[in-house]
Structures are given as structure tokens and as C-alpha cells.
Amino acid sequence: MEALSPLREGPDPNEAAMDVAGDLSKSMIKFYRRYPSITHRQHRSFSLQIHASLCRLMLTITMASEEQVKNSTAPAMFDTEAANCLMKELRSTFLAGKTKSYEWRSSQLKSLLKMLEDSDKQICDALFSDLSKPEMEAYIHEIAMIKSSCKLALKKLKDWMKPEKAKTNLGTFPSSAEIVPEPLGVVLIISAWNYPLLLSVDPVIGAIAAGNAVVLKPSELAPAMSSLLAKLLGKYLDNSAIKVVEGAVPETSALLEQKWDKIFYTGNGRVARVVMAAAAKNLTPVVLELGGKSPVLVDSNIDLTVTARRIVSGKWGCNNGQACVAPDYIITTKQYAPVLIDSLKHHLVKFFGEDPMNSPDMSKVGHSRHFARLKKLLDDDKISGKIIHGGQTDKSNLKIAPTIVLDAPEDSLIMSEEIFGPLLPIVTVEKIEDGVEFINSRPKPLAAYLFTNTKQLKEEFVSNISAGGVVINDVTLHLMVDTLPFGGVGESGTGAYHGKFSFDAFSHKKAVLYRGFFGDAPARYPPYTPGKLRLLKALLDGSLFGIIRALFGFS
Image 1: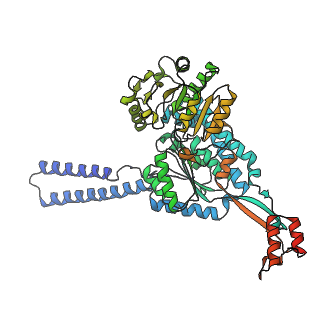
Image 2 (image 1 turned 45 degrees about the horizontal axis):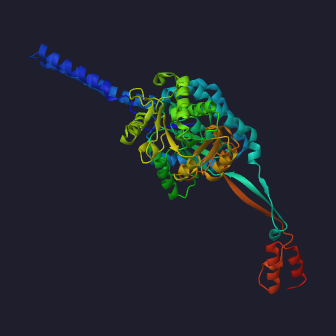
Image 3 (image 1 turned 90 degrees about the vertical axis):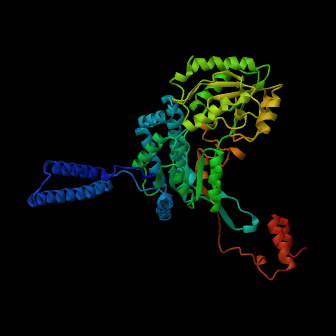
């Protein structure tokens, strides 16, 4: 697979030539100083030297230019024209039927699995470079999940590809029907920076399993992983059907101008609106994996130790809160809040030490722009005096300490937008049931979590909270269950994937009805008569008694 990226500056081919020109000027000055009164013969000799130097200068320029073209690793600039050529190439590959066979799909998945097995050290190094992600997090949350997804697809692929039998009715008798999954065509996957391997490769697995040609656009905000993905996927996968385009806004914009058969985007709502607007021009279907403020409702009749460590792990042990399903805020009663806060503080120290800013087990903030956004949330006047733990920042190292904020106003910045970082507000209510009302007063989140031993509260939470996913007595773990769809609802996204849902996301369910030439009912054709109408009504109603009556002429 080729890696297409924006033009990078190489060495200037004129630099060597300028050296020659400089040497020439020095020689001329030196000569005339030494020989102020030169003869014609001396002048002619010196002119020949100048001519030779000029020839050498032109040869140097030519050779330097040719060498740059020959040796440059920088590809051509990726613009709309390049995107159009890319699309034509992939469309040609798809229409040739190359990606549709079971053999091609399984071979690509096997190659992908081999890539992961061969390159786990490189992957961990890239994740550390981009995010300071601990090796254990990198392996468990990214590499292992991708391996699991790949192995599942290989195991189930033949079953997923099989047509599904469907029932018919009396109106089409005699007939048979089936639902045939077919690939959509050429699809675009735009990934995010926070889990740059998982959120890039997991959708690619679904797209390959479904038989599509694929373009992956990794996030430029995780440059080490973006570069590594371009290199590794280019080495292990089929160049003619699967490509990586590196770059930033210009490259993404060029891609979005093309007519795709599906666009799969992971990121924030602001960019999602741009993606959806671009897709709408061509009526292209989209999957939008977004986020939102995922709440954690904590009852008092719980195992406090287990609850606190699961929340701390799910918040700060998952890329330091930079996960779309990380707990965004906690709701608990005023009476129980002090006990819960003490336990959270205890486990923060236990997990990350007295100086968490220097903990090797905590990721850094992804990039400087995101750091500035989180700092703005902390500096909001409306939460002044409400920070009860943490709050320290280190701009040079992109580190923010785990921070707990108690009872931030509802109109504060930290309660108005998805946090996506190491800040955790705690909202207190009079009674735990009020928490359900509070959650429902806000946009639908990607995930919602409840800790309780009360059966009635569990049932109310599952029944009344609309969210992409719900977990009872834990956080984030629903991502690991491949038989559950993962996706949002409302502002937290549209569409879902993981396991077979990934295959379905990149497939079209084609309805197929089979009939023979026997059993052609004259009643369906003109001229229409009352008798024909009675028979067709009976057929469409599925009434065997009505059909018999109509055939015998009874009204």
C-alpha cells in the first residue's frame, strides 16, 4: 500500500551551485588584485577559466536537480487532482472484483494480523512518542483489541458472507428469498489521534472483511503512528486496493471532495458536521463515531473500593481521560460525595503516586492545542475554589495532574462541553433518582455508567437513559464485547461497529427474490374484475379461506 502525504521540502538543488558561484567570485577578486594590469593573453586564459567554471556551475545545477528527483522520498502534493486519481484507481480495482472474494479478504486479514505480531515494539514506541502511552495500555487497549478483532473476522468471515434466508408470503407463492451482503465499494476511514492504532485499523478490518477498497486517513496529530501506519500497511497489505493518505486539513478536504460509497469518521462533533456536509453532496452514507459527556451515577449501596478503582482506572488509566467513553462527570448524593471523594483520592495516589505528573503510568495530553483547551476549562472563573484535588499543569511536557472538581456550575465550561482529559467534575444531588433526570436533561452521551446494587434503579437506568451504550457497575468495558455494537446516538454519533457490526457497517444488505415460471396468477393482470379483486385481496391478506371463497366465486 502506498502512503500518500503532503509535499515535504527536500534539499535545494541550487545550494551546491551557489558554492561554485561563490568560489568563482572569490577567484575573480583574487586574480584582479594580484594582476591589476593584465595582458591580452592573461585575460584570455582567465576567461577560459571562467567559462569552465560556468560550465561546471550549470552541470552542478543539472545534476543536483536530477539527483533530487531521483532520490527524493517526498511524494507529489496530495490535492484534489491526486485524490481524484486515487479514487479512479481504487474504483477500477473494486469493479474488477478483486476485493470481493473470500480468498482476498482472508489473505488481507492474515497479513494484518502478521503485521501486528511482527511490529508490536514499533507500535508501542510510536504510541509513546505521540502520547507517552504506557506499554501496558498500548498493548491491552490497542494492539490486543485489534488482534482480537482480526482473529474474530477470520474465524467468522465465511458465515458473515453467507446469504441469509428470508421468508416469503402467499402473495409471491411459489418463491424463495434471501438477503445477500455485498460490499459497498470504495470507502474512506478518517481516524482520530487519541487511540491512533485502534481507531484506524479496527474500521479497516470491517471494511476489508466486507470486501471493500479502502482509504485510511490517520490523524496528523499522532504523527509517529500516522507515519508507521503508512509504512506498515504499505508493506503488508494490497497496494491496489488499500491505501493510506497522510496529511492534515488540505489532504482531508481533497479526500472529502470525492464521491465515496461510505465515510467512517471518528472524532469530534465540529469536524463531523463538515464531514456530513461533504457526504450530503453525494448522498454518501456515514458512520460518525463521536463522543459526549459520559456520566457515572454512583449510588450509596455499593462496594466503595471496587467502584473507586474502576472509575479511576477508566478515567485516568485510559489515556489520561482522552477516550471517547471515559467517565466525563460523576453524579452522587450530597451525603455520599465525601466518602466517594476520599476513596477516589486514595486510589489516585495508590495508582499514580504522590507526584502523578511524573508517573510513568500516565499518558500526556495529546498536543498543545488540546492542552490549551483543557487549561481554559481549569481557568474558568466559575470553578474557582471548586478544585478539591489536583489542578497542576506543566505546559512544556503537556502534563495535567488528575483533577477533581466539586459542584461546578451547570453553565461552566467544564460542564458544557466534553472534557476529554484528566479533569473529573462531581455533581451532587439530593436523591440518587435525581441523577437520571439530570442526565436526561442533556444531550445523549456515547456511554452512561451506573454503580448500584438496587435492581429497580438498574432497570430504571437501562430503560430511561438513552446513550450509545450502558454499563452497570463498571466503566468502558463494553468496548471489549464484540457481540455488542459500539456507536453513539444523537449528538454522540450515528452508526455502530465492532465484531459483525463492523462487517455490516461496510456492507449493503441486498434483497433477492427467486421465482420460477410456474404459478403465474392471471388475477394480477388486466382487465380487472370484481372476482380478481376479491382473490387478490384474499392473497394479500394471507387468508386461505378467503382465497378458496374467491376461487369458487363467492363474494
